[in-house]
Length: 199
Image (cartoon, rainbow, N blue to C red; front, side, top):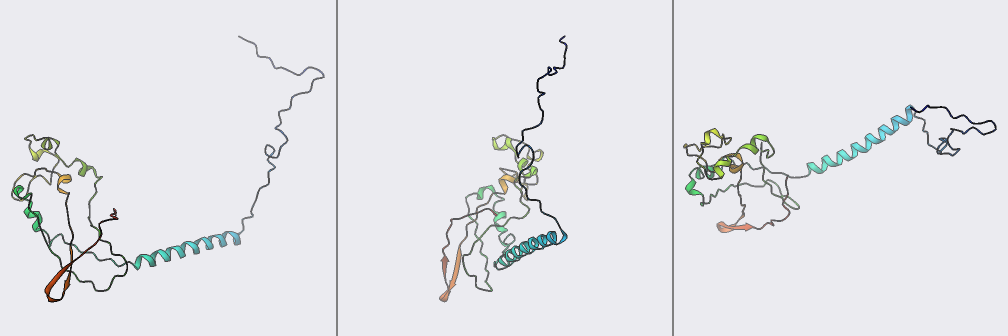
């Protein structure tokens, strides 16, 4: 083992200094702003911040309230389409349903149309597992023992193919907006199909 000895300066030698350099940074002499927090300054800053946030909030609420929104639920009115799909032989048949609605007031500016789905969560565990991989591979499996429930059989007892929530939640809807004209004629209202968004 090596003996650890303290190295002491010899007589006549200057002892090394352990103090940091005499600079403004190392000696913590940099200029700084040290505000004096008083009741008046704190309350005034809070009131100014609150007034700014309140102004922005009022503007956002007024802008949101100025939007005209009309919701039309056609789930029950187009229920015949689901009955048509219960028979797998009707896979190539189209289902049409019409809904009459009247605007109570004029809508200025651009008009946007969206699909609305309630209680639909694609990232839910039960939704992700609601399928039968063996059935998709063409095997003869017992659907009742799979994860397809409650989308395993139709009302008449016919097994769904494919089964599960993933396969039975896909839909294709096409809109046509006919405008009633005199002499019982209808004119289709053209609308662009660009700028589609997720809401």
